[in-house]
Amino acid sequence: MELGNRSIEVLSIPGHHPTALAFYDPKTNLMFTGDTFYPGRLYVYDWPAFRKSIKRMVRYGEEKGVTLFIGNHIEMTGQKGKDYPTGSTYQPDEHALPLTLVQFSRGCRFNCHFCAVASYFKKQQYYRDIPEVIAEIESQPRKLVFFVDDNINSYPELSIKLFREIKALKIHWVSQSTIDMAEDPKLMDAMLESGCLGHVVGFESVDPRNLKRMRKASNLPRWERYARQLKVMREYGLQTWASFVLGYDFETPASVKDTADFALDNKFTFAAFNILMPYPDTPMFKQLTAENRLLYGGKWWLHPDYRFNSAAFVPKSCSPEELTQACWEARSRFNSFSSLIYRAVDFKTNMRNPIRFATYLQFNPIFRKEVFKKQGMRFGFH
Ligand code: SF4
Image 1 (cartoon, rainbow, N blue to C red):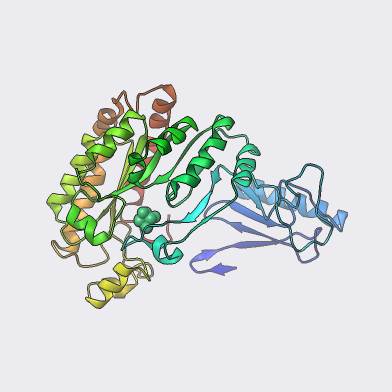
Image 2: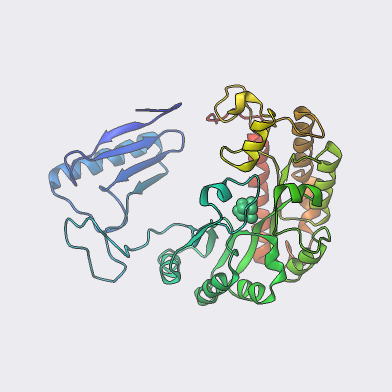
């Protein structure tokens, strides 16, 4: 089956249903097994066919090197020993599928000018029930959880309730948060007591003029170039993945270098020097379209000449090539081996205790490899 530029291999696997299919993606080595095979109650209507299908999938998996079989759901209620009636089409409170990635909410209350989350969710945030989130974490064996929320601390009262429940689970976790979390001691206490190791934090820029253009409301109050918030985060020992959006109107190669200096000075655990990407439907995309500043025919994500980490628009204060080169230099500098060693030596964060140091040592080389591998890559190829 052709899916854009990706071929998916399809296998017939009757047993649960005569028409059941499995889908194998050779690019990721994942096999999707739908309603036939998953970690829960299996419903089999034709046993001989089912046995043959499972054997075929195992053989196929061994030949192709499948790394993960992913089922559709669990088919069991969250209550021990209680199943849904056969043939149910409505299955509330289904037992959680065990994944390392957990999500408490979607969306964000802020409205950043460049952000696809803000335009998609229209400043709304949608939450799951806390007991459901806790049950999901409890149902899996891993002790390090990544909450993939867009901004886990949008509404601190709700976050604190979640963190108080997490505390008893004795896990460690990371997520994404706006930097205004550092202004709320109650939130910081609850977060740390629940096992938080750190966050991806959108600093975006070290120039308040750019932040204003971005409408980055969480970063601007009482501007001190983040000194106050960083001091608090360090005192709490949070490890930070600093994220920057480079290319707003006052950006120049010199300001990108200044941003890299800022990241190095603060010994961030990770840093991402992202070129501003005009995502469709964002106010930024509309503005650049109206000003006729989009490159690649306005659809960089489909254009055969577009390469990863290249500017897809004409910046105001430098050329697209200068911006691309400056961001690459920032990335290379931050991820060099000498920087890796220099950043490690921070007894408040990266060397605070063995767990922090192990996390730093384990993930920094992986991140470094990814950064260099992806530079200049054509979309859809790897
Ligand atoms: S704070 Fe982050 S997630 Fe929220 S709108 Fe801004 S960039 Fe998007």
